[in-house]
Amino acid sequence: MKSIYSLAILVVAISFVSCKKSYTCSCTNPGGTEKVFTTNSSKSKAQEKCNQYYEDHWGDIPMSETHCHIDE
Image 1 (spheres, rainbow, N blue to C red):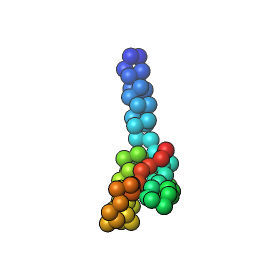
Image 2: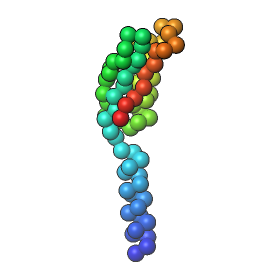
Image 3: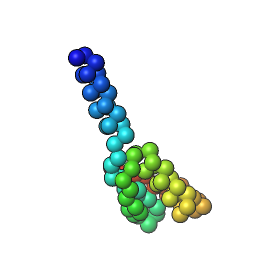
């Protein structure tokens, strides 16, 4: 019986860790903040996509106040 509870707790913990949610990538520059896309994925994958968007669209612009981040 104890092993059944342990297994149930493990399954619940794993499901929360790998849970996919909706994340929005927002980019801020001197002109303001813009929500550029929304993705349904894990937080780490959403951050990777947001970082790639930044590199593709803003990476070569030398503005210290330009950055992109994810919102939950």
